[in-house]
Length: 331
Image 1 (cartoon, rainbow, N blue to C red):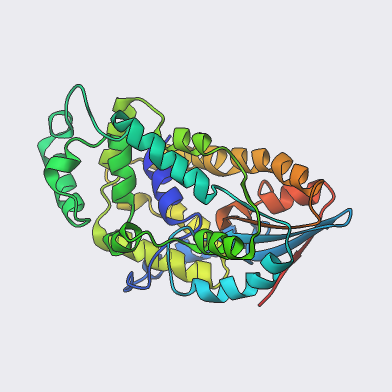
Image 2 (image 1 turned 45 degrees about the horizontal axis):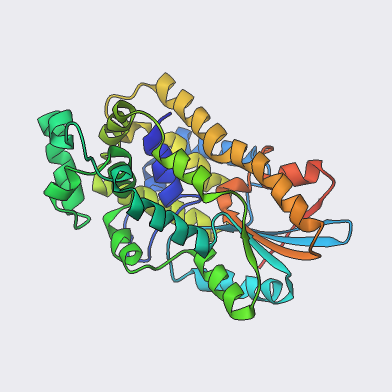
């Protein structure tokens, strides 16, 4: 598994995540005409490839399904306002991880520091080539992480940190959240119960799994040039807020040249495996949870990263296959 992309896409683009401060040139503008045509065709061929808010109806139950971005951006206000009536009418909000789940995960990590910090064996400077370590020190410093701290971080945790562009770090450090967090805040103010689509332990295992050697390899691959990283974030965000979800996902397939030493066949295989593990398997696991909730509630809001909406193995397609009537809710 190309853990770099797993971490980066969880952190940055499920779907695209960025801040208003992440401005500048867009990675989309660097594509050649042939690449742009390829990207457009992939998006056109993707089921449910446009739209962020959807309605699903079956047997008297109505789901309002929102594709979210997990990191903060002031432009969430418009989507938040559009979803407010649905929350006011709902009996339940389903999300990937509730606020309590997030607290439980933080407590678990605090009680098990060896999950994030190297407590035995070689530190990262000892395990990495000097030039790679120097690049990591520079990248960590851009995110206000001193080298002595980075040296003792488990590689998966450091790779996830480096997957976030420097322009996003301060907002995250202040505890600002994405659309999911805003919807949970609104649900709390309305007294609306919130439940998870999956155990938080499953996502933690997805993030932190693999051997130390696997994680070291991923960390080496995580060293995007900051300018390239920023340009990708700009592209992803622009696609997200224009509700071009398929474009937001498929543009990641054109980032191979940003990673030194990665051959096309390996890149394609790893992207395919990423889709299977991060998207499709989880989508299938969520359907029984959603349908079980539908037996107990008439009106449910379901919010998850927008990449889970798309393709014929996305949540919308899986629900449609089970008899749900799906319609897009336009602005």
